[in-house]
Image (cartoon, rainbow over the protein chains, first blue to last red):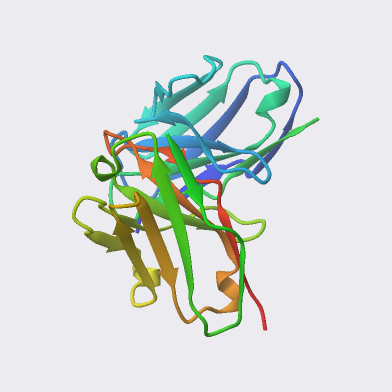
Length: 107
Length: 118
């Protein structure tokens, strides 16, 4: 199975900060990586797919990059509604797997 | 697009649970459906996928032998049944539609909480 390791697992940031979350895969997954945002009590929401394509309706302050084994999600200017947990997911091969999550909290 | 799941359930260890996910707003048979679960305070765990048009399935090895995913095309509903429940199966169970390019899950159900307790 492909393991995804997210870092950090927790980060504290202020409104307006630039935030970067990293996701490392245990083997190459080309660009078959998606990012989701999850708020408490809610289902995950798709932000980015195939590593860097922004889902329709998602603000442009979110961006993704990477290929192979290393990927990043960047929020260029953190907004109050962005405080949530973020997960990466690989869709290169079954079983599909998720990273452990990164919780972004208000400093 | 809407995915509406069944309500919360409380089950005893050893029992089975069947969660439903009714789809609307798109052609049901054109999109695969995944099931994902999330234990309290934990991350997301993929369970398997079903192809609504033919009923074919692919399950995570962890759940092989305990999970059954089915569909009813007449009601645009997919089902996930998990048997031999144990306390570790306490979780929110989500259905999620596979996107057209198979590279993402684009719509999710609201989640169904299953509690396993004696």
